[in-house]
Length: 299
Ligand code: ZN
Image (cartoon, rainbow, N blue to C red):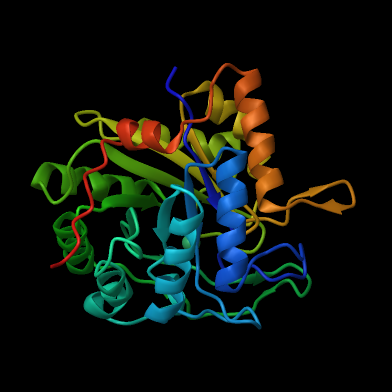
């Protein structure tokens, strides 16, 4: 079976209430990226955050962080476009990536495309009510086509996120249209506990995704559990040939009373994959599995 691509999702919008090891600032993210690479991760995904944890989607944050990650290792970089924290138009949401593409030192390797729209309000388990009631993660077909065109222009790999079957079906239509080209790298974003926009992070939740992978195009799939414990599914994913995207951004992973670091979470995935006969893919092997193009820096 293919080697397994492991992605470290180091921070998302997670607070430090659940686990104090969530990195916020560039220096913290850079250190975690290196540690996760050394533990066996081939990709790092992060969100810009201020010292108080608030989202920081300024281009400067991403330029500084990408350059620091590049200096530390060859781990592949997958930044966010800001999720619901960046409600700009298509051009505005992609503006930080355009800045990153001006230098090989700051260019990422992936740019995400969440291939549909969905309500992403936060449920509060303590009060039994929604904390928000108006958060829509909007990705119109036109916006996605703009992202796909810019991603191809820059020689980046589209990181295709599917929150439910309708997203996967849109990916298939984009493959048919030539908006996307195979192999498609598709991330099934399962959700639990405080967000119900994706399939549940269960066997049934994942099994409801995979039969809808486009049959006429080579697809490589990975799995996230946003706000849930992905270790409940990692053995299944490893056995079925999937790949794993995991980290403290999604869930406050612990070992008993001890808070794990992102690198320790990656070490656990590596150990489990090896025990089941799959070696972690190096960066070069990941590039090969995903047939990643060469990044083109603007003159
Ligand atoms: Zn993210």
